[in-house]
Length: 629
Image 1 (cartoon, one colour):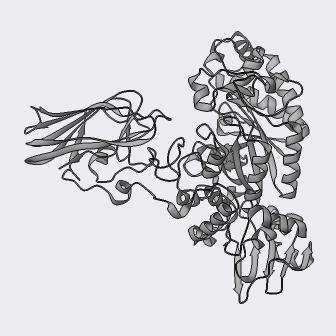
Image 2 (spheres, helix red, strand yellow):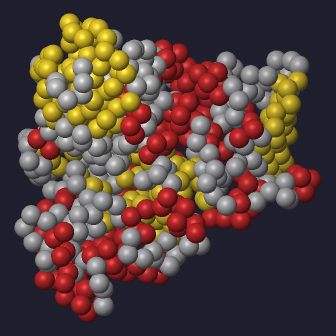
Image 3 (tube, helix red, strand yellow):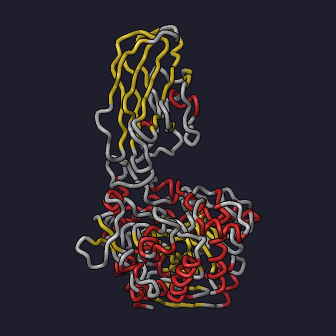
């Protein structure tokens, strides 16, 4: 065990300058300089500590520990080896003498790494596991398969790695632009890779030392373009990239793959994905329709549920539990399935209402592929803005009835890799936000104060140890217009809409464009109003007055389909009936990445009514305020 302690310290480069992340349940500081290298005593499974922790839930009892650090050395009490291991993680962060009594809030504290969109090899995964274990993360979820590449050796279906693991294009975006072409292992243009079974065994051996479970995800029935490419007989027909639940060949392949996965991974959970399946082809596929008729299924949602339930029976028969994204609720949830709630929290809440277990991983708090600081200065992310403090603010129990707490297993952070082409970029997006997720999962809410100072010290040590973490000390923070508001002459004035907003992005409804509140870095923050049509609004300034400027800032974020307007027109009127065009502001260039562009013009004129019209170029347009001065 002394070698393990030394390895933990050496691999992370931890120093006494660190502070504890996640925060422990209790810390009683004492005087003196801590000696964290000499173990004075170790008691695992002692009766006294078992009695002290007897009232804890079973999972917390098994992971609890008490650590006392003095100038002479340290002492540990724990009920299990896992508790002892977590005591060593806290020891590695001790900067004062004292006693720590600690146990986790939730049993499941996870991180998902997507290695399909951009492959990450064994050594990279092993490196991250050390940092994750230091945060007491105990579940590593590997997203092993998706359209962009199959990343696991499967002996029974070798084309999954010799063909489906390789593609044309140096990164995911290039692959998409090149019409999603696959390649052959060893071909000059081939980009990709996969984990061999030997790689997995090495990862699992390390996971055992780190008291971490590794959950494999084999995506089905959607996100399976690479499988259908390698084995067309499991698809519906040409042009369809979902697995065909009408064909027995599909279940033969899935069960063969899962047999090898179950043999390889000891995880009690096997993740089957289940999200975002395009079911349109199933409506006209003869095999799917025949299956629906034979099984008495009335919808394609029930057809997907048939696949999930059949796979669950197979997984249960092998002694494992099925885990899937919240879409597995559609058409009826499998009897023993656990739901991972990503589209907000509703999927998890519904699963819990039905008596199922759930893991909360809502995108607003837990999707680490979002940028973590001002997008105009950050490497490209996907789908919005998630700063450290927002990730840390999440409380998974906030919407759950107290009598259902036992069905909430915990929380997970996810890092999808569409826009993250390099290992360095992966680390940059992980750290330090994964520490926020870890503290949400481990620490009691009352113990989470001072997080920014603590995590900054932890993050500095991580950077010193060779991790490419985001330097939180340089964080710019939220967009100034969001933090400070926008002062202008139209604040509080009535706005009349000719075309209404998209119902998914109402912001403050009719008050949005004159409430003086600018939007933040993310279109989903409740300040940006979204349209799939013209924006055509008229502001009543209440009396005729000089107008000097009219404009508005638009958000451009091509990833989710948000683009700058084709043009903006500004019209003035004294009576609200007869308008004169005062300016036309054309789009100069469509921005290729996330940006915030002011469309406005100086005006010379008088008016009571100001009409602001924005014509879309394509997709959504998002506007936060119409500024009139």
